Image (tube, rainbow, N blue to C red; front, side, top):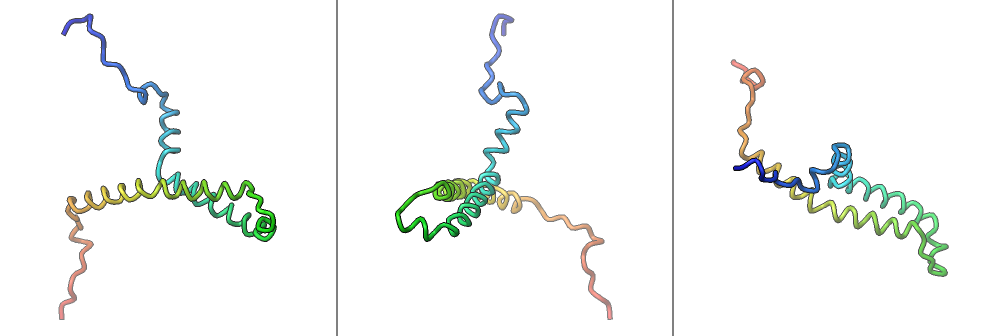
Length: 111
């Protein structure tokens, strides 16, 4: 290898500052999306419940209707990632032997 060769280029994720990568990881995490979706569903349901009769007479979609749909979509988008993570966890747990220290094991009482 000569000294004139260029180093391999860094990917787009390597170009982000550390703080930006942390924020992006937090925002794109499935649990974060699930929590945001549930919050949107609950808050928009309260608003929709309060204005249910008024919205039915002349159909007037309002902001809480959109938030309800957005919340449902966020929850549905988070479910596949959570299931995949749980499957990886179960596969990992099946490979790791359970190590219980001898002092923690229950001993039979002797007669």
